[in-house]
Length: 147
Image (cartoon, rainbow, N blue to C red):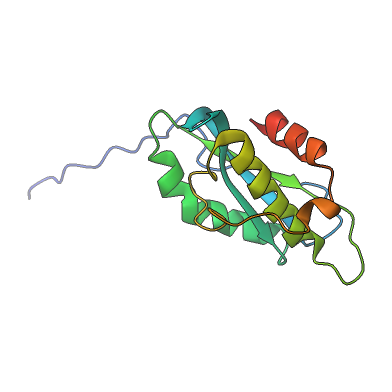
């Protein structure tokens, strides 16, 4: 009887994924995906690779990260990425989470010359009433802190 060669099992050192609970009162939030390395944009470098929004809660962030994982990890020198949540208070009759996402994308484009590498929308759109709801300097500070 021929003895079959057994396969070797190995445990990789790094984590494949880490999930933590973030205290988010509202289900409708904006999230930012950040690479572990700064990405070169036209006017500077930033770790931000995607800005998105969800009305489905924190579960949507995990799905979005899974969908974009291949594109982000394919970037030169990027080994990992994580997500951060940006929120604002709700206002009656206004989808504030959508306004916040759009304002962040417009501000990012103004600071870095283009939208984040994984964002396909809002490449050429102009601000309308987005800055009536948020202070532009605060949005710049948030983006700089994340970068």
